Length: 329
Image (cartoon, rainbow, N blue to C red; front, side, top):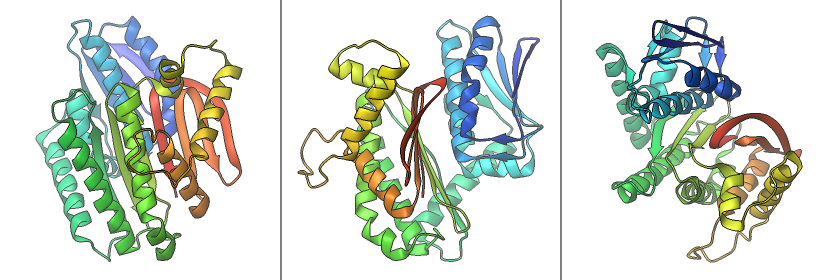
């Protein structure tokens, strides 16, 4: 990525592939934002050949962060996109990113692009509801998870969970996931839906902010599910609940490993109505990862947690706000 500034425009020229590694540019982008006065953030896709769902969602959070920080200083900033190839535009539209960029990142686009985005969103929502065995892939457009303080929280939360259930049922009914047998999918359907439900509740309970979720599947590749929030992150959430401790790499990693072990060994037979269910969603996801030979990635603060058949690894990376959960199976 190249970051340039000219005539009140901060330009982010993206690389050939925009994937989850884009988070490593956050601090450089924020540094440029803090040191320049601008009215427009331009996202230049001239070199971009491919964009993934996690990459698109990270881009949403980066733009939203920059614009909100400027708005707090009473600067009105909008964003725009340029040099979009047809394949990249199609991916962004399928992911439903255009509309959330418009709402959360003041994106200005042509009526033609807005119309394309609306048509894609309506198509996938209708398709998922109806079911279609001839499909090679299914998208569920990015859905915003509202903060608990929003007036529409109860209705939005219920709608989100129902949408996800519709999507997961469509995967099962249409056998979209090529490497996952119908029996495995069916036997773990309820457990996995509950896990996403509880993981979403963690956004509401611990992030103190909004979040976003989306999912994409194809017969030739694994399913990718993203659950992002722009909140306080795992470690700060722990500090708020348990009390402060000395922040250093060893202590941070120790807390993350303890949290993951605690979550992953949660008793799955506990009373479903019990109030303190924190972490059980992560435990069920980990179980699903084992069964499906998948991968669970959790980016929180400056750490990446990866869980797969080899176990848990924690690596130190560039800081990024909130918590981003990515599941591939």
